[in-house]
Image (tube, rainbow, N blue to C red; front, side, top):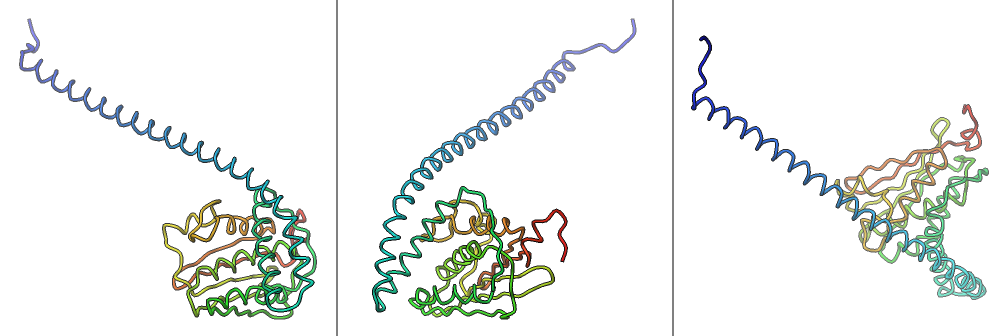
Length: 267
């Protein structure tokens, strides 16, 4: 009889090897089960969070509608008065109405109504409107734009976009700081930049600044920058952010929105 005789020691080695292999498989399976359980728990928590946000959103929409009519009345009567206090009331009401509009427009698609507009006047209008607010922190708002810089775009949407960006910049800029607005034509596009002298945005927060309900400030509600992004994308444009000693938002949109909306765009 030929062949290798299996000894008790061989059987023990094989059993130990099989046992170790089984133990490794069990540990691996246990790890996968734990990971799957954790993922399911995260999904459950995210679903609950989204349901709560949806409920809060519906309530906010109802409140926004209720607030808007009284705001219109306050602005109307305040505009009939004269003096610095009346101007402050009108400005405050318009800012509050801007916040209400952010809430109402957040879930709606952006549909630009292009018209010929002066980018220089747009920037200057934002500066004049917000400078008294910035002055409370002795912040200077400066504009730099060629008077010949024009675009065919939605003036109201771009005004709302810049209002969100500049309000954020003023909020983040320390006392005696500066916020700069600039605009220029670059080929078939218009470039608009908003830059502040604040502390900048931390790297771990940079990836989330356009997420709804995420804010780097206690004063913010987390809707401003997502709305900015929607408006830019609605104009077939792009927005980039750089941060270090201050933060700079650079918006690039087609100079002629009507051409950009055509099937084949050309300069």
